[in-house]
Length: 167
Image 1 (tube, helix red, strand yellow):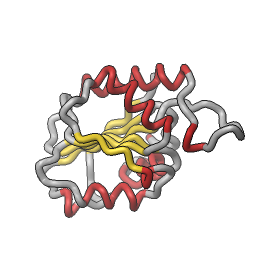
Image 2 (image 1 turned 90 degrees about the vertical axis):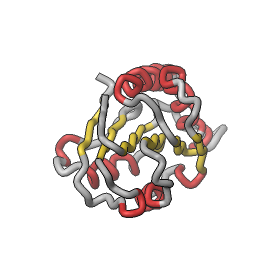
Image 3 (image 1 turned 135 degrees about the vertical axis):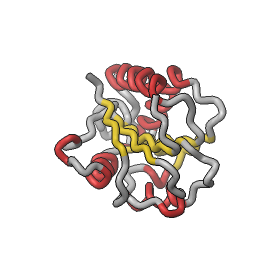
């Protein structure tokens, strides 16, 4: 179990269906593999994080499905869940904006988002960039830190980072 004061968990959605021209990219759901990845990731996160205060999830079908299947394992009931269209294929600045505006009572935040943003976040936050060359579908990382105000959060501070793979 992680014991620092504040935690941010970044999850890349599970493996999505192939894009076809009968629907938009935003409307792609998960493949069977993506469902399995999401449940496994939920199990792994459940062993590390006892509770979540807020969940920010892209409004795409695949990120919503990823969260719902993860949540079968996490059983998040008290968290505030926000499905946000601005997180669909967003840039790092969108994430940072949400972080610095959080209430100080919030200790643990979950983001369910897309590439390339999640890999860009990994590069920016990890001082050993060789660990995170590409966040694959169904993978995640956690940053943890102690006694920092959300309003003073920057991507340049030093954080403990834990990478969670599908292996």
